[in-house]
Amino acid sequence: GRIREVQMTHEGTSYHVTVTGVSMTEQLDLLKRDRSFQDVSMTYREVMEQVAAGTPGTKLWFHGADRAIQSPLYQIGETDWEFLRRLAGRLHTVLVPSEYGTFARLHSGVPDGEMRRADSRTVCVQTGYDRRNRGTWRRVRTHQIWEIGDRIDWEGYQYIVSSKVCQLKRGILESSYMLAGTTAFWSQQYENPHLTGLMLPAVVLDIQEEQVKVRFDMDLVQQIKTAYWYPWEPEMGNLAYCMPEKGEQVYIHIGNASGGEDRAVCGVRRNGRGNPALKSTHRYFTTKDQKRLYLEPDVMGFRDLKQKKPLELKLSDEAGASVASHRSITLTAKDTIGLKGSNIVLQAPKEISLVKRAVSPTVINMCNGFDTVGAADRVTMGGGKGDQFPVFHQSEEQNDTFTDRKTIEKCVIASTPAMELTDKLERQLEGCMVKRLETSSTSV
Image 1 (cartoon, rainbow, N blue to C red):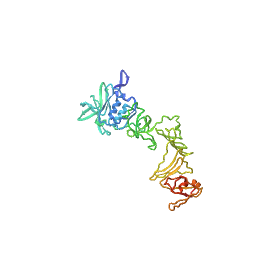
Image 2: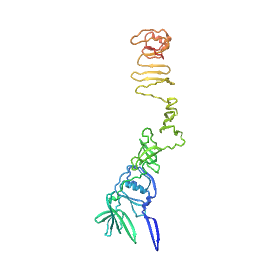
Image 3: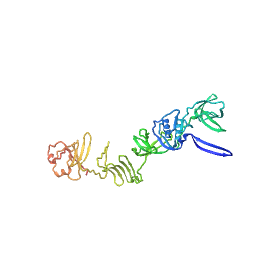
Image 4: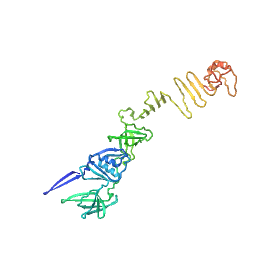
């Protein structure tokens, strides 16, 4: 160890010197650190050895059972000694420092001491019962030199030295020891109470489905292979969210100090100052592929920001609903698609077609002319002006003739391809072939 403090007092002709010494394990209890251990395949022994290796010359002996850490560990605002004690507590054991050597030496668990026998001058000064550990203990005084972890055979019983106090009285070194069973080295698990609820900033290293791997800002290095998969669980749940991308900053929420409830909850905006999209009255939800949902006071909609030409669906207080696309717009429904309004305008520079795709297709096409195609050989027309047009009903066919050519030009507005006619009607229609023409009283 080393000397921590020296006090000298003068009384009469005598000088009294008090020297306080500490073991070299004090080096582990000087500096508070912030770091994480994300590799859940590591065991507590491996983590403790890695922590001890941070102080040059430190030696750690591990005793007892070992197991995997199972969830990430965080050393935040703790010295290495405090962190190692907490890890030992998870294994229900204690840290035992060694007072010898020029470097830090410590044991996790009961040290493997030597077998010793108490002599007849060993005196028991106190006996008690430890309710927590459920074991008896004895405090003895002797001139023998024992070490913590030594097995002591005294009066037919075997004890373990759990603590020692040495004093120099009248030039004679006198030692006081606590003798107990192995339960004296048992410790209850405890956690750092300041961990629960912390939000730790980190940078995304990788993403998979709804999980992320991160490197915490407090860590200098983090390998992707050994990083932990944190679930991505934003505050809004799955109502509306995007997975963060590699290189973006997120917050990891520590749900419980004992581990197992850590999750990534939100991203960190790094372009907030001066950003026009951050008005309190405007809300934007934009994916990495530049697809945006926007909510503004007088308009809402969807927009593709990658397109140079408009590609947008918008609901506006002023203009109503509008769909703009520099490509095609497709409406598909299992049942009926209805268009209702005081004015419905369909405009196309090349062609407009209405197609009924079924066993018997029907087509209305407006290109250079107006054409209809259907399986039935019947066209129904109506007009509010012009002469009455003869009607041919299926139940009563008549052999009427047409004498007014202008009437035919006003009333015939469509043609349906059919079989070639064989009577005089063919010459009068001048190439417009129909088999049945009907009129109705409805005005258009």
